[in-house]
Image (cartoon, rainbow over all chains, first blue to last red; front, side, top):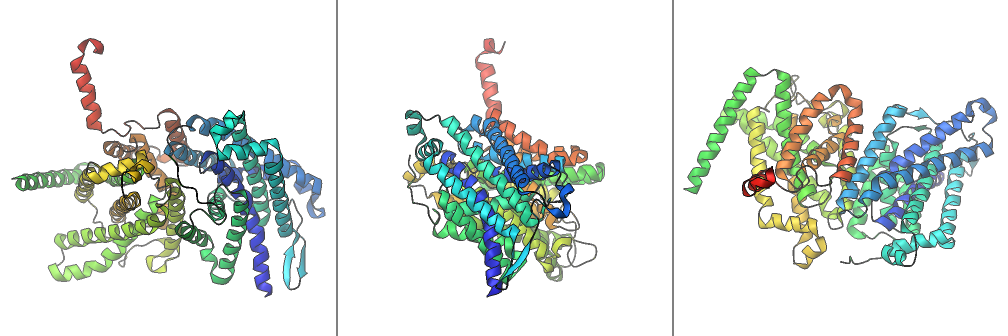
Amino acid sequence: VSTLLQQILNGLSLGSIYALIALGYTMVYGILKLINFAHGEVFMIGAYAGYFAALALGVERYGAAGFPLYLAIVVLVIAMAAAALLGVTIELLAYRPVRSAPRLTPLITAIGVSLFLQNAAMLAFTPNPRPYPPILKEVRFELGGVIVTNVKLTIFVVAIALMVGLNWFIQRTWTGKAMRAVSTNMDAARLMGVDTDRIIRATFAVGSALAAAGGILFGLDQITINPLMGMLTGLKAFVAAVLGGIGNIRGAVLGGLLIGLAEQMTAGYLSPDYRDAITFVILIIILMLRPEGLLGVVRPEKV
Amino acid sequence: MQLVRRLAVASATALVLYGVGLWLQDGLIEYVQRIVLLAGINVILAVGLNLINGTTGQFSIGHAGFMAVGAYGAAFFGVKLAPLVQRLVGAGSVADAVTFNVALLVGAVLAGLAGLLVGAPSLRLRGDYLAVVTLGFGEIIRISFNNAHFLGAATGYFGDSPAGLPAYTSFFWVYAWAIAIVILIRNLTFSQTGRSLAAIREDEIAAEAMATPTTRLKVLAFSISAATAGIAGGLFAYMQSGIRPEDFRFDKSIDMIVMIIIGGLGSISGAIVGGVFVAVTLELMRDLQQYRLVLYALLLIIIMLVRPEGLLGSRELSEVIRARFRRRKSSPEAAK
């Protein structure tokens, strides 16, 4: 039982990272009907931004005493801001000019942006993995035979806090309401006086910031980061979004947690070799049985 | 009469290919020979991928996976088949040719089946799901070959003999297959089925309203496209002593996409031009390896922003030349 609990705990903390990234996919898809392939790379660059911010704030000087919590929050904020800026820039330079083009054009552009960021990062940061700075000093404790670390708990708590914040933002603020309006019907929203360009920009900013938070948490969880980590993690997060029902914010969270759990269970009980494959098995199954996702609604395609 | 004429054209082509192949073997340094072979393989890859990405408008970004299935299938099956064929017809060039082509076909069938497996669930939905599924599939295939010990795992598959895989791939076979596949795809594209595929690209809902069996045709086009990638994989495998999972990384899929986008999505002649272009530029950029993908990525983005239809668009080279010619003829004043 204790190993099962252990796997569930690890799965939930990994899954909450996927959920944070999946939110960005689902928000952009909800509004533009575009799979933002570059989102995984925004996540990766967010992790690097956190890395460099932590080094600049002198994480090494603190050593065994541990990095002060307020500085860790500063690192998080810097990385989120940097990623938001990157997301908005990508939208402005690459996606806006092709927004009204046939469907394939933005898709290829997104693949191009993803490739570009990935390979530019390999040139800029070298392809070698880097150890992630200890923003959080690890404390282990045992709870009923389960090893709990404060890192895993923090990942879970930070992710949940950000998601609750996002929910408030989407439901309560004017911008959030406008986002929902644009996602339901862009033309109608524009007629009602919503500045759609601004809302799309805000969507990219928020989604990218969440991905950067995911990047830092991923760095803490996996100990190292590398320029290629955005590809596979981004894909898994996308599958999470599809599993929950793409365009559906709660679905993305649910999907992320489920994917994290499934991956951890596979690694624990089958073989670690299959941990990456299980995601795609889930994707194929969901596409066959319920393509609209767990929480999605069937919407007939309109002309 | 028709049949006789076709046979005559086919045998003349075979003779010319054979002659050019002999000349290349003697006249060119090995380095250039390799580029010429790679260009032919690229043409097969590009024309095949263009059927699904260009003509049908469904985007696959993991075709390296199908190429890998074809390569491993052809290599493994060919190695096992060779002794059997040699016992039947005696060792020699006939046995080699039979083994080689049967192995290529087996690789193609396996790749086509893989395409069916991947395409059937994802093609029922809108095209962008295919992109994600193929991307994931390409990675999984590579990881599987990395762990398949009977296929040499990460060190690669080199056949049973210490010399590695036999060097079956020659100029003659590469270009014979390339010509056959180009003709096959061309005929398919300009047939009624091909028109339906183009209708799916232009407006899937309208196509469906016109009683086009959209899912079935998409899956068909995708499987054919995967099978051609499998042929290219088999030719690629027998070009060197062995194949490694690393040969079929995501970069390879991107190379293929660059091939078809440069020439123009949906244009067969564009795909041919793009395939040759990529084979040559890859060699020229050998020293710039690490910048290659950055440049390719920028190229993709810029083409999409500036000229999303590629150089030719969905037109064929012959149409463009004819249109140019006609314009000049009809209005000599405007030409000035």
